Amino acid sequence: MSEIATGDDYEFIDRYDMMGIKRPDPKDVCGGQCEGTGVVPVHVDEQEEPWRTLWLEAEKESPAEDGWHFVICPDCNGSGLKA
Image (cartoon, rainbow, N blue to C red; front, top):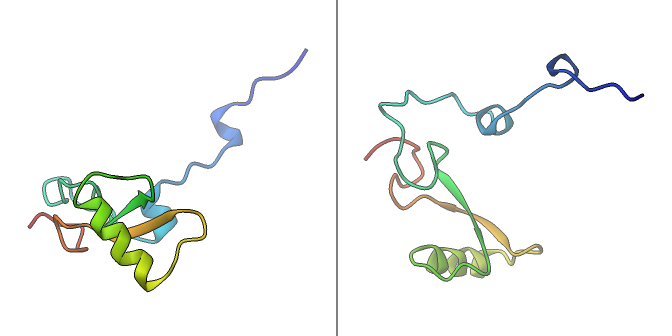
């Protein structure tokens, strides 16, 4: 018989912990795709604007080995806060 792991066996880390970013106040956080982080992960297969153009600009600066770039959120210009 196998045992089922409990919540005590895991440590959960969210995007704010991972990136070392202070948790934003929900009333002040950007409502765009960055969800308060200031950056958005975009894959080479993305065809919708403005993501396609932002991906292409990032690709010019530094080619992606895995097809992904983190681009500056166009809604908050990278601040993570409501404009």
